[in-house]
Length: 221
Image (cartoon, rainbow, N blue to C red; front, side, top):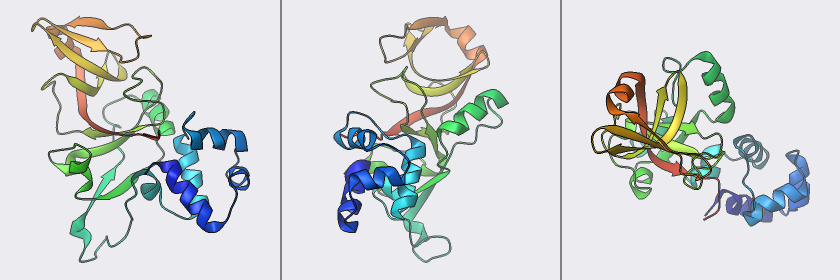
């Protein structure tokens, strides 16, 4: 079930119209209708507004997992708390400020079985949450999506999508080895040209923050 499907269920239960709810969260009925149909996606800010108006947690809207039975409860071991990635010591203040404006969700809580069901393996304690800004990685990642970042990976272990800094800037890109001599930096959106960097130069100037383990999309599937 997608975010908007959950929202529609709650609106039906409360006998509230979509138009009335759209006005309640300070958006237009036309915009809300586009989210419901899948023509557009709600931003992170709007997801937070909807969760507040519907009196549910952002975690539940994003994942369908209930936030309960934790913090000292005997059932606390059933849950994993995934926090927003702390990049304060990895990127400069300019980049950090822009990134924090994208992902105001600070934490989600999911059951231990959630990560394996979504193709995530490894140490769940090393997972962190990061918001996506821009369309350079579409269709793999879209503006407003969340990624689960495996921060136990701090070097390019295999080809894949990584979060990294290079030349003072922050990127989420697909990295591919080219014959051991170069690294191909790829934006999945064909409108953005790929480029190659000498392997030694890349290793000297690149700082891998983590490997993208999974995507939590706001889009319908």
